[in-house]
Image 1: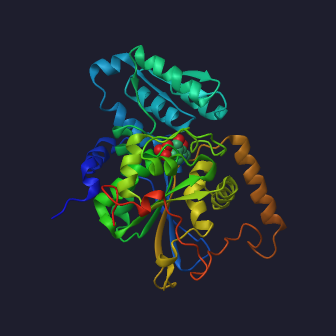
Image 2: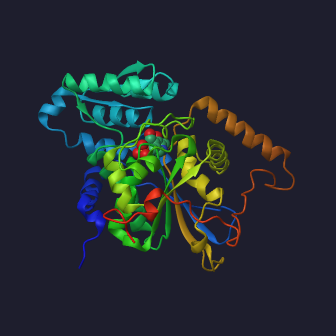
Image 3: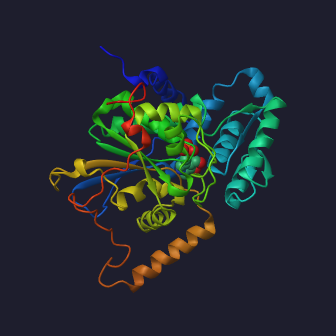
Length: 373
Ligand SMILES: Cc1ncc(COP(=O)(O)O)c(C=O)c1O
């Protein structure tokens, strides 16, 4: 029997990570969401309801729980625009380890405050790149780096989201995962291949203005880009080599979305009653924008819908931004007649005849070790 190309990443280690985080990190719900197209049975994996409000708790705990006594004494450090920093501060405090979180100074104030509330030292830098340099310095001084995405233990912890999806809904056919540096999408796609093989399609969803993983896959190595997207959490300057290598063997493609589509999706999820930050809505924006592979929709009906999951990855928005979104939702509701009509009504997906084909990653046409065809 030929071995699957992803087996070299030892996906069974995600099972071990799941055991390690059990009881500390939440198993989050998978809830149905009416996307307005009866051909699609969409369910949202609500990681916004996770401990610390984002999936990042999984990777952070999987990391901190495995520190050696020497590493524990030296403390942990990371660069983060928010959720990973908050998660690491939480995990470190919970296990009695010192944490330093190096953040760009434009990180949301609530995320900076949250890191401090969990007892971490927060160092603010001019930019994300300056933060990376400061972090390197701290590692040279003896702290252990807990990388937000380019690290095996982080990726394996994040992958437990994929195991939960596969175990709860083994007949799922299509999963959308938001992409920043690529830790979540590499972990989740590895977990889904591990449990379901090629029965499921897995797509990353990346902002057009921060296409670091798609570009990295195309070039086979990390590419530092000038970032123009404003979706915090999805805008690190490059994706990791490990993330690129895993995704080359596990992903069906990466879809690129505009910031405006992500913000519109956030509004729909907020109208649904969830507290979601923009990054957390990126994967559902792909569904709402009709970026569903045409061939998968062919022949689908209300009785036999396409089974789709979008991972809602985080729920720590800037409070002022959330208030503005809630006010818009409220005013659209009051101005709409009759019930629910108006711009908050779900937009139907394009019909299968005019739906675009899935935008492919450059690796779709590849052959060789990364190719699955
Ligand atoms: C809410 C949220 N979603 C998605 C991501 C992207 O995760 P990754 O960097 O692992 O791709 C992040 C990263 O910070 C995040 O905070």
